[in-house]
Image (cartoon, rainbow, N blue to C red; front, side, top):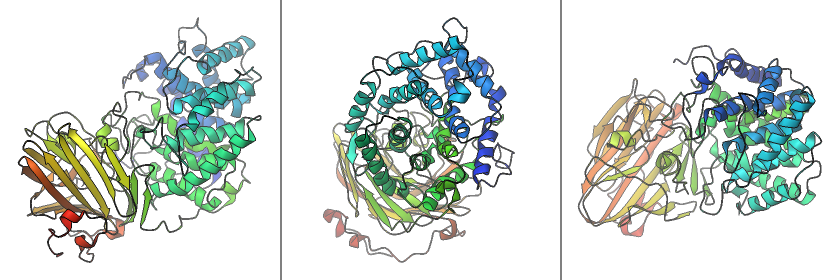
Length: 608
């Protein structure tokens, strides 16, 4: 795997509408043969059976191909897709997808079939024989009317399926859409924010790439949509755009945070959904810039398998960060990003010149999501105290970190034993024996202001940790922890990781730092109780790089109450220097930070 191996984006400037059409076709080219038999779909294994993995690999590319067709694009593979759909919905065929039922992955894939019938009936529906249409409609109807779905964004999958059925003249189920939309109302938290389920569920990418995207599609594809619902959906999406833009850096990278990150450039799908719905939440040039820069950032990543298909992983193929529900075809959820291809060339989304983001300011508090976003130092960082679904694989890495960065990414655990396998970048590890380590998963309580993030969490029922995260200038933040423990504990706290190859590292006294190219990371203890060190986390634990070096702080604590504090400094691009240090900034008077706990303010040493 190398970065310069030819891939579906090679040689494409990725600028004009025609460029993006070619990019989609390039991404689809390997699919003709890649999933021709079940053996190609046998790994990775998933929580659902292989024939559902075949369904997923067949239909997920339609998230891009359907809008491409709606916008006048020609794809040679439609007949292959129609044959697969006809077989998959025929109970007598050996490649039948199986019966859709309650809590079933098939319901997820029914949503894209519905959208395709609504956007491109001339490609998927009209060429089918009458009996094939009947079977497809019957299968999709059973999926739309399944008895039970998870209480989250899944409520909208039947809505998408019903949109498709109605578009091809099928009778809708009375009240189905209204019931689903009513339940989604219960997930709205104000300010444009949805949680992915009832209160206490995460505010992650399932807001933009699912809840907002599906409701925006509903407003454009349902001819009889309630005008009040349409107005509400558009208003909320516009509000959310003003917040979501803070998750993106100037180079197009987005915060790697939450589950399902193998869906990659679905990160920018919300911007395309706004354009498709005609919601100018930001100037068209700004919207297009956000969308295009993210896609171009992804085009620079070695994310492809040897056959040119999208791998399961993030910036490179990686199963440690995958989910229980990720099969070989899962990454093609990313094709939601291609929704703007349905728009004509004269649409203002395509005629506008890309514009950079307006000045985002230094910090943006997003209490609805448990985030305090920092801009500066060459990257975007989110200081975090998030809700988490503990059923998610590697939930501590995806939701429990203290900080997530567009330039420095994050890590996930590779196993249960040893601090190196826990990969504690932007985390505080605690252990009784030095073998089994615990970190934050979810918060018992939290609050977010423009000055600080505060959270209380319990690594064991009888151990309490209070954490304060304080923005301290471009690329810098201060962490404070108050621990109350009835027994001795070992601790390891990490800053941000950098790539190990060609890294220059140094650990001395109460600090440690690591530099690789234009990335510099440092951590320094502020109370004199910890020693700096360089850790080499397990290979493939990091989302961006297969091997990393991580500056950490270590100490052992007796039972009782303890205060720990550290300054974390990470800079990227021209903000970093190559001599083993970080940006030479003015000394930070930590005691002047308004969010610093009063109990610690007078105990910190003078700034250097």
